[in-house]
Image (cartoon, rainbow, N blue to C red):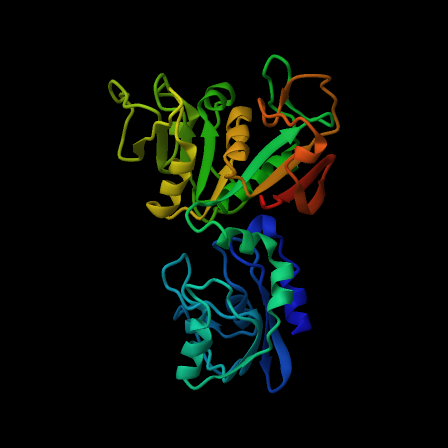
Length: 370
């Protein structure tokens, strides 16, 4: 089981959240024959990976076949739900003919807790639960964070900055602060997200496509493009209108008329707040989760939108790409926010950092508010 937890450590919460980090070992006649871990949201779960590594996957029949493994060691109870991106892991385990499953922790999600173990027992599989729930919790703060907010997506704020903390120069220029390695990782983060959120001013200033473009491979899927601030004055040649991904336009009031480029890909969500001309952001993200099934969103800015997510306690994590440059002034990552004392600051924890060429990527979870 220690080796299963070590497998889970190979993943980063930056890529797996809001799913947990999970590790798995497949055994045959007492010997380890397959290893697996969950590497990213929407990707194969640890159980599936371990069984594939053991040789149990039949690509022609698109199913697991028995005879390659007889035991599984899992850091977390296998999932049983079919209302998600991939088939339930219980199905893979039963197809592979596994006779014994040893789990470290039970799923802490009350909707699923114990269901996977019960289904395995009902099919004659021997199940052993080692009660390592505390060890699992220590390894999975991002997953537990998501469970504490069941009505909104897990929200990751992303920006690139100079060493002195500016995300744009004093005249608003930001392309490009980060290097190509950092920008490529951003495309990975987009491909793992169900929605990419951007503010209207950043949409016009940066002219982004908001699509996931991965070198040499097709992305898992293209995220829905979410623009806060409306579609008025967006030109038909704007890069965001390229591709076949859905686009959500969040506005504070009904437009006088829809633009000429409007298609079935475009959806208008009118959500005024009590402040005139502003979108009700808490309500909007709840709708993205509850009505459109978005469990993970990537918020790419701009500065005012980042500030709103922080101010409204809607942000779960931050990823920052630091370049070795000094601006000496400019735009901050969350313009308009400010605390009176250091003790009032937003606290960051569980840092993961990585050198990407001459850039430093730092990812943090926000400390839950008391």
